[in-house]
Image 1: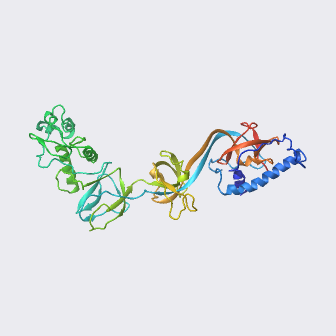
Image 2: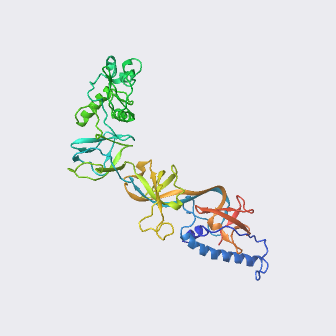
Length: 443
């Protein structure tokens, strides 16, 4: 207990003061018997201030003397050197480990729900999210939502939208020579096709205009990632794409139409973790059928809106887990709207302050172990002072005339100005302070 008080006694104290033992007493000051009496008064004043400021240390002001992993604090009466180093102020805040807030899946299928996944299940690319009228709704990766059917124009004979002489080359390796190079060398017929709006129909002679768009590119990228080939990944949905779609539909147990309905696919940025179901088996499907989160664990901190300067996207923090281990995290997003907890008084009130949500991602998911939800502590770096002179907090003494000082190894007292308190040390400066100078830990 004595050790803890000694290390934190002066944290948070104001800087200032001037005094050396060569300075005569102020005018009008009576009853000070010289050097011995002056030193006794200084020590007495120091003890009084140590006792008083220990209360402030107990309230958590200043740095944590255990963070730097150094040895035990210096013993009373020993001497320590003034060292030049970097002081870093670290602060702990509470956070919640989990998968983030659940959001609804944009399910467009209509009909009766005939199958639902288990809550907490992870669905990856090509996996089934649910079944409606016994037809699977499949997850694919992308940022563009599914907003239209994808397929060849209605009534167009398959195989006529490309130069028939190149069809044999457009399977496997030959696909990129023709199917994805419409209008290129060896495919003059396609190059003469007049432009039209995406999704429309129209032919030039016996050739059909293909469906084009970024949604086609996104879908074909997923089809290729699932192992289907024979087409070129580009912005054109042509006969070769339709053939690959048929093979994909066959693997899903669907009618092999070569056309992708808008209700067949749901896009997300990556794998999803299934949340709670908003419907039951036998109910009508809808936009509230399922909720989901990302599949990676993260931490959410409700940071004080008045003290969120540390919350900058890309900043690194340390997350302390319940088992005593820690893992690095990176700030991914910071909310822009502050909210006051229910019953909080907000600004000018007596309740809890307004907060903003700070989301922290964890790259090393294995380091979290099997935990899926738990309260955690998040440590962030606040102020930092580089290349400054420091001493252990326990080396500070309170001067009778005010402010702080240090006792040198030969018994002199020099005044100092204090700066940042962190890691059991304090920044000191003054004309009489230099690196390597020996100072005494007061009794």
